[in-house]
Length: 204
Image (cartoon, rainbow, N blue to C red):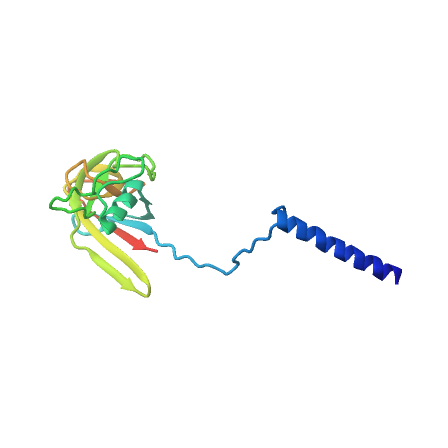
């Protein structure tokens, strides 16, 4: 009985101490929501295919590889989707991509170049740019939850060693904004060869 009495006294004492701590704010309890939360993440994934053919249509070289979506490309995509014309973050991307001109911000020009310098998210252009070609027809893939834009571009009459390609919103040999870039094992073009570069940008 003595032990039970002692336990009872200890219980009352502990209860009193807890009450005092709660009253003075020295002790508090917090609850945490442990319900599972699911987030859907969406991003761009780029893939590029290059096919070199000779004058008779025979395949001389084939390259297929993933590419880098640039920081500028991501910024442009966000601005175009939501109509923002300026950025509130530090950086050079201060105006709406495409500039509201005839191209209206569409990334439908493929550029090729001679530099083998590895691509990076901070790139704003290909290093050894030769020329750009507008896509020959954009295709949309929407099947079984897969959404992708297919953009082929054709080049002829070029004699050069090609090691890089980029996806732009302007023609010419420079300027505009670059959405994606990739370097690859060199392709040696002669003036009689043709080169088809097909870009696939998927939403994942």
